[in-house]
Image (cartoon, rainbow, N blue to C red; front, side, top):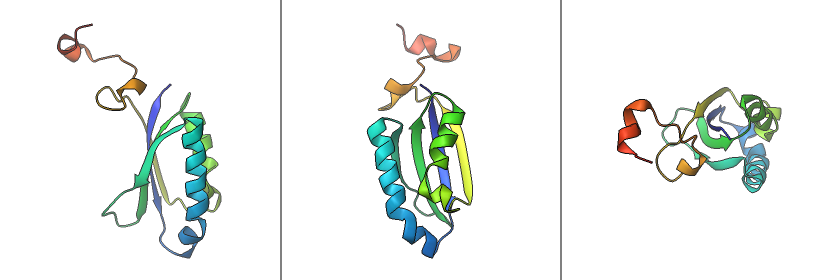
Length: 110
């Protein structure tokens, strides 16, 4: 199942504080369902920003999960970036496609 990197930027203010608990409870549900692998705030950014590593059958499924987030329904996402990612190396490599670029195949013989 494809993995996606999601960055959300949020306006600072009262709305964020009112809905952050519901947002985190929603993320916990996605973790329990296996759709969210990791999430947390970005440090040193001009706006409140979060980073999520999600998996879904396709981009439309990721879009639907984001749309279900209380921050989305409350209009508290002012910038959203979603990129498909292939975590070939490291602790998330069990979610990778396993398709190494030709230039790297000699480094990882089967």
